[in-house]
Image (cartoon, rainbow, N blue to C red; front, side):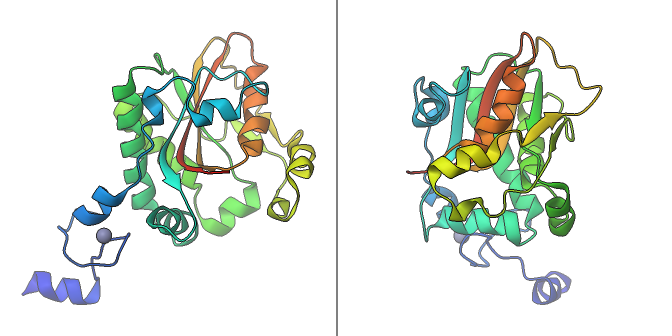
Length: 227
Ligand SMILES: [Zn+2]
């Protein structure tokens, strides 16, 4: 009785499809988990995410967990994570991403994780940085620290979706900088973001990391949008 009353007032439903056929600790039902379009990029050298950065920044290994397509389950989940306060879902998807990375055996010994920062006012408005929550999930699996606020986003690029691809490159120049006192020289770094589309934002942040002597840059994102 207590549990069904609880269910009435705090409905526990699948974050993917809304069904209530799931255990109290689950966030996604078995159907949605089975429907997730896994890329399996982590295990493959020269995968589409790695190719995105060829000739742009130095990337050792890169992966995305899921394919992102319009009007899909993945689009819905990304929306839940970014705009609907589903922080536990972000963490859960981070754990899935961490498992892919761990089992690929291709990312070397990561020393630390840097979540791609949001612009300050954007994070205050949202209450969290979804990339940080993904990073925390990954960190739980590969057992390394997450260096939140180690990189600063200097201005907002909220209007960039209305610009052409070439404009975006110019728009993201000088978008990120390391905070004073952060010296990850010689470290194997994993940079984490939610969705990769053109890669322009990751490119801007990755180029800052590339400039730190002796660092190796790896990239993980929750989803990969087909261009
Ligand atoms: Zn479901």
